[in-house]
Image (cartoon, rainbow, N blue to C red; front, side, top):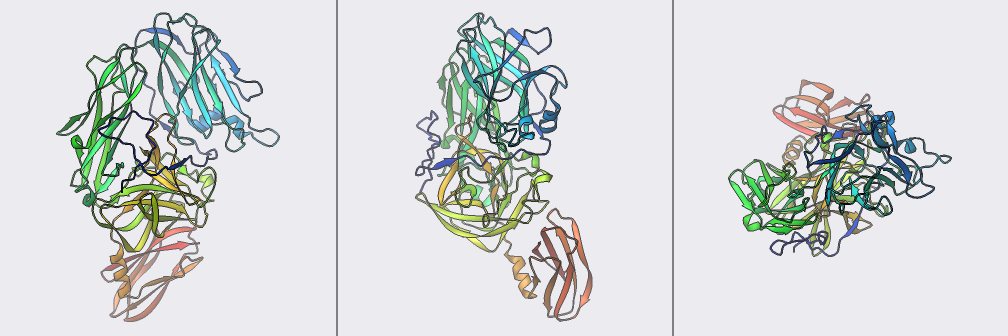
Length: 620
């Protein structure tokens, strides 16, 4: 019953561990494009830290004494042009400040075309470049081109560095920033690109921005600014860790959180890494995984100059999943027999939290900054959209709730989603067929949901069986679109949803062929049914629910008791109260005034003597 997808077939995989999940052919599709976000973007990757390199051959910081840059378009009739000089103000509003402030730099300001788009002034196709003067690179057969940048990706913009070894007659294109999440935070970093130059005396480089659609809502993009362009002599011995990933179980899935009952019998985590030889000499590369006393290595793989390959630590040598609650950090480091010129890009770490009850594959850590965009449907718009992650059960367990992340939408755009319902669904997957087990988990979006998790509860727990595979999704309820949060990446094949009744997986990113973005859809094995048993003792009911002005709490007491009512929003802030007072035995109704409450989801906590019951209520 292994769920084995074919998304990883582009990788070079050792026969001892396939990592090539082999489900019946899985349709893949990109998510719907997003409209431009009105809020200022958060910058990621911190401050720029230039990479120490080989001998400097050429540099340019756009100062007036530098050789001139040429601006142009690849094809006639396309829109836009690069500029040099100060960083545009509107780019600051949407992307944040460039670290060099108003210092001269090269920029392509794509956001201006979106801001002014209209029927009379449409967004057009763009394919603009910023080209250097001729550079003598006869001193090196391979060089590293580096530059400082700030870049915020939209839906259809692509960025390249083009290189010519014959003074601009022909060009070779290298896509950069392909793994940047669309419409998420601006990336501020230093990029290093290793390229062969054939020791040419007539080299040129150019930075190129291309937008692939002219749609007034989804075309163009935010922008790209570059500075401090350097070309250094290539390294003889150097490697880079492109991405590190882990899988566990017979289904070879990735998890960031595991309930302790599952972790205790899950077995060993195995590891894979995509690596690149960024030096001139071939390298025998080993992946070394460590965590506390754990220390295991992959077999060595010989990787020639500028080639990408895959290293693996097989399950027999994998990291045993801990059987106690806590966080494990496992670090992967690339080792070769040579002294490497630069080592800070040779290592990465993975984390696994063993929890009481939460099962997750995403990397959401409780802060909006850890989110990386949203799912708002499939690009062809077929069917009621839903998306989620696969979970293999290692031990029997029962679900109490599905946790669903809601994307961090700008304040100006929140109103269209508040009051809408998102539904959690659970499918059992066998032989490529997904059978719906339950679709009654629901949560309503409120103003405090954005950038947070909402809990879709189920009164009666649903039992799941060890050894079986389940797909857990977040779905739009009755076609009401809700932005489902994404956080981090996971191995291809771990994420899927439905698109017109067909199981559909996310298409992998441009630069990480084995990784896809991960939706925040989790299993919660907490038992919530005890609350309902207590409520039944008092024939407790809150009605109407949803309500427009007031709602009533009805209960029946067998004996006299003190009763109080406290209403809180989902952040825990008290918004309404009914003070404690003594009620005699018998039936009672207490009115709760919700006139001043905004539309959304609230928790109504009723305390009867020593018993506490919380009901979810919804203000329309």
